[in-house]
Structures are given as structure tokens and as C-alpha cells.
Image (tube, rainbow, N blue to C red; front, side, top):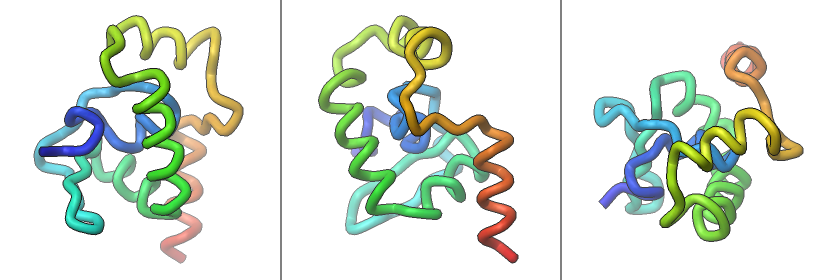
Length: 99
């Protein structure tokens, strides 16, 4: 079973349940993580322990069992998490890490 209900694991880091792409995944410590795309996967892999801890927290406290549309709207508009990074910001971090 995929972690976080099959939602993009990197989205859950920010409390945002985005759809996952079954073709973009990674096994980490025997658990299946699905991502929305290669960029999301690469961003999550920049700091797996930190990102798993954040995703576990938001999954347990907010996302699991919630209405995904309502949760996604909340976390992308009025109540972004303090550590929120846009896709462009994450892409820059991934590119810098690959140098």
C-alpha cells in the first residue's frame, strides 16, 4: 500500500493532497511513496528524514480522512504552512543539488 493514501508524498509535506502519478514512485525503507512527478520526487529526496517527518505529521493531523478538495484549497490559499515552497522554488533547489 502506498503511503499517504497514494497522494503525492511531497504535497503532503505541505499538507496538500495532490494526486499521485503511479509511474513516479520510490521505495524508502520498505515503504512505497508516490509522487506527482519527477520534480516532486526529486524535491522530497533532498531531505528524506525531514520530509517524511513533515508528511507524517500533516497526514496524521490534517489530511487523512479529510475532504481532499477542502484541505487542498485551505493549504494553497489562506493557510499555507510556514515552510511552503512553490514548485519553482523546489525546482531551483533540486537543480542546485544536482550540480
